[in-house]
Length: 170
Image (cartoon, rainbow, N blue to C red; front, side, top):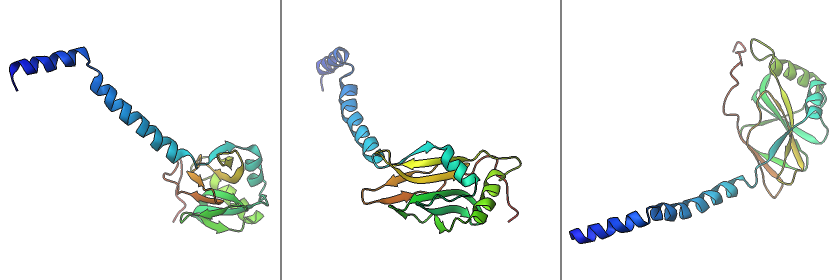
């Protein structure tokens, strides 16, 4: 390469300094958008619900849901109800019969899991069209829930413990 060629390249770069950046951005931004929107399209969302919270705290199972828990059976971290029209697919949740006695014991464990009373929330889980596909009760705000077109629900695991949780002597 001659000195004249280097000067010409520097002049071109000075005239269009953002050309490389523009080309890179023009390729990366659409690819990133495809990844974000493609991955997020089937995930459910949570809707805070006094009705769900009140049902749990009055030890009443909602009849249209099949109940699951994660954590220890006698001290769950969360309770998930999946509408009977859907099938849960997950290795992280165990099905359970939500008797009033069991719900009463669980509510006591969930609200007094640490040195002080915990705030526990009830949520409806909605699909992308806003239909109620599940319910959630926990001091955690939820886990990713994927709602598939064939009425399958994939619920993932809790990834972290709340800061105020205490041991249970085990």
